[in-house]
Length: 458
Ligand code: AMP
Ligand code: ZN
Image (tube, rainbow, N blue to C red; front, side, top):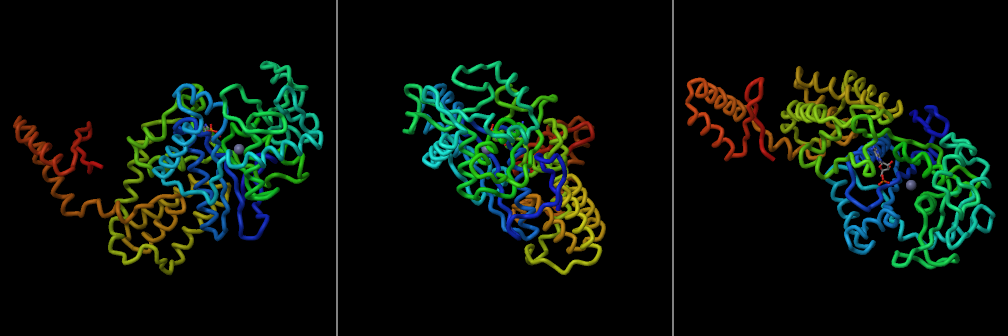
């Protein structure tokens, strides 16, 4: 299995630290607002990484943190005029709801930053004792020049870093590129007591402490989207490795952005769609399909036309699977034939090649094609088994139940034909009656340039 490692800028063979076990840490949300569909891309992809490892027989220990103290929460608390703890509670709950609605599985550990403050203070103290950190006016900074490998993940050079950081010069810092470990609280801000006075930890320290506490000093995979390479992950490495002298993670995985007209979707650019709003319009599996049909490191432009095509693609899978309701147990795996094993291997090969979900989906299409022409239920099993690895077909039984049997479908098509004839005859009353009566029983007709289509209202 090969995974692209940002640290080496190469695809490398994945060898777990402990046999058959994967320890992974994915930087989670800062809960100051609802998360947008760009964040969802990253969350969703790493859900698939976890599912695939499990499918290949690994035990996965998956930590995803919740940053529940940060400047942005404080700003939002002022905006909404409610305490920071209430902001955290409100948006953590919303986060759980949206994650569930997206069909993302819970990680094995969901750590909250505010539950680890003592450990964060201890880490900063340790860095100070070892000469990597210094205090100035109640703030504590990490001295980047003391850590000789600083810049190794992002490939940034010290001189460029200094020049870049000078723009927002902070006179407390010895070197403009130094970063904050502990931030002094302003009056009224949430704070914790520390050897440097009342304040709060910096974001980078939070992730170091939580990952180390749950996964140990070195773990297999550390991940996020590419915006986290610098400064967040670079600064995590500096703090963790300054103390342990060991690599923080063996693999650094970074997903590409969801863009809008070529620009990163982000709150600060105000060019975002909230996940919960997109979910009102599009089914979670269609959103999943939309993201997974591209490679995770490629940028994707948010495009509703392609989203609509994804809706259709997912519908087609369900249509092909309609006959599966005759299966007694969907979970019981049949003895696959050589041809089916070959397809399964193709799926695995695609996923083993740095999680090429686009190719893996192409294999699903191939299976669906054979299933349609042969009606061989073993292909249905295979389609479901592999689809589930990508997170599809989670409510299969329910969705199939709600789809119509062939006779009902024929009847609807018959009514649509009658309605077109009524329209041709200018009998608007009858044409409208058909549309309205179907609507009453939950079937909606839509007139498109290619004719009338129908769908079951959700
Ligand atoms: P945040 O809540 O801003 O810390 O972001 C949560 C996660 O979403 C992090 O892993 C980010 O790297 C990721 N992320 C933020 N914006 C985007 C985007 N436009 N596309 C993909 N991932 C993103
Ligand atoms: Zn992090």
